[in-house]
Length: 161
Image 1 (tube, rainbow, N blue to C red):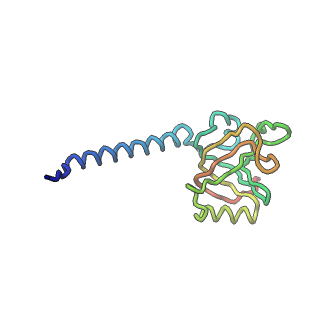
Image 2 (cartoon, helix red, strand yellow):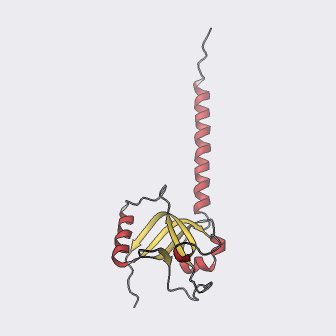
Image 3 (cartoon, rainbow, N blue to C red):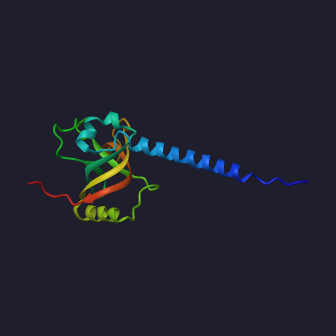
């Protein structure tokens, strides 16, 4: 009984097709997550158009405030002020996605240090913006969530003059 050996050209062709297909899928996924919302948003702009960003990967510039009870992303400079519902400001809760976020990175360490010392930091984050439809979290603190996959920048909050 003769044993057939695979044709090297055919094996190479199949491997090439699989690789190209995989690369195209990765490129499409990256384009869909970075596509029309690739610019850095402010909290003010995000809250003014929350429905159009829901479920999308965004880059957000915000003030990250934290204490022992909760953390939130906000911006006190929004004009007009975001619409309150039931007397509550529409805060954004950050939730770090551990499968893609590195809590031991230099930026994460800088953020933790600033939050422990000053309870706030100016940040730029990337993540998926979520609108759960109602307030949630500790004492119903937050209206929206940002599932953070990447810290882009962390700075100390400076007093405005």
